[in-house]
Image 1 (cartoon, helix red, strand yellow):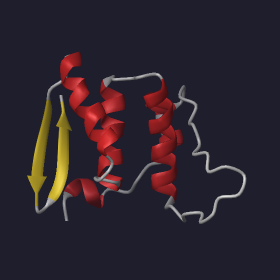
Image 2 (cartoon, one colour; image 1 turned 45 degrees about the horizontal axis):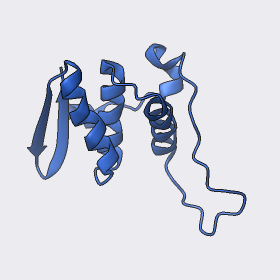
Image 3 (tube, helix red, strand yellow; image 1 turned 180 degrees about the vertical axis):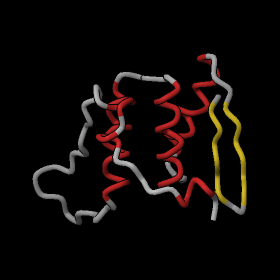
Length: 107
């Protein structure tokens, strides 16, 4: 297990860098046909990701959040678009494939 996987997850609402961000909840409508039982970490990460996506935020913390979102759902291509789009904003993004898992390093 990697050292970053061994660390306990700290909710975004408890991290100082996210205190000024208002999360955007997923809108499934009034009567969702089949509600999905997401884990709390996934729900909160996606709520903050939606808030940043709405305003096209591409800061270093936003790219770090995108990295966390990728770890939770590596099949969401929007995450990759955002992360790779950060390269044009003065950031370097390294894609690492380790043990079949995708890892990003944002500098």
